[in-house]
Length: 82
Image (cartoon, rainbow, N blue to C red):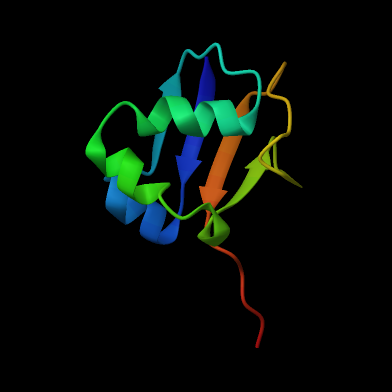
């Protein structure tokens, strides 16, 4: 099982702050594809990956990052400074 966390507008579109999921996905991109096939709300949330950032076990990663041994994946919009 892997914990998936959603923040900001991703949480609003999906309707959940977090969920636990059993997955065979080897990378973050495969996880996103798997989630997007579940329901329309996931497909909409992940429709523009340029507006999504991801962290695996609290470390920022790219979409091709491996998930082997990961306990947590967090999705959130890009941060802006100011």
